[in-house]
Amino acid sequence: MNSDPNGLRVLCCGTFDHFHLGHESFLRQAAALGKELYVVVARDENVIRIKGRAPDNNEERRKSIVDASGIADVVKLGNRGTKFLQIVKDIDPDIIALGYDQNPPKFLSETFPKCKILTLESYCPEIYKSSLYRQASQ
Image 1 (tube, rainbow, N blue to C red):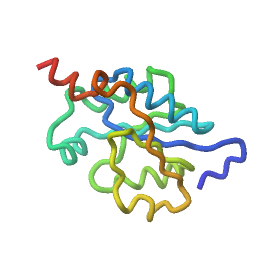
Image 2 (image 1 turned 90 degrees about the horizontal axis):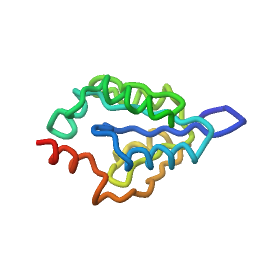
Image 3 (image 1 turned 45 degrees about the vertical axis):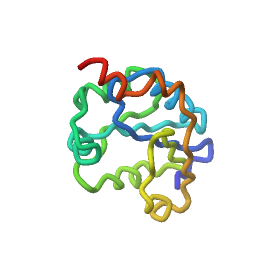
């Protein structure tokens, strides 16, 4: 666990394709939970493996858009392949913030027992959801 006595380190992860107000709300809620916000943007290959399709925007573009929002203290690309939890160990968060539509792996709390795992509120999901943006662009 983060040993910084001045505040909590918060981690959130996601694809962040078609960055929109729902993503911004998620990141702002996560940032409000601690002193430092780390955001891990999913690698293209991991999005394909998990969601069964490629994101519309490549990983570098998605990372740069999240970074340009100015909400996170650190924005990183996730690890390649199946060692995706290594980045959680490297960041060593106190809190992992999940989006309302993210389901944590069952072993997440077992692997990081001292880390609080919170699911954050949605922000107008009937309007601000990447799948809706994807459908509109097709």
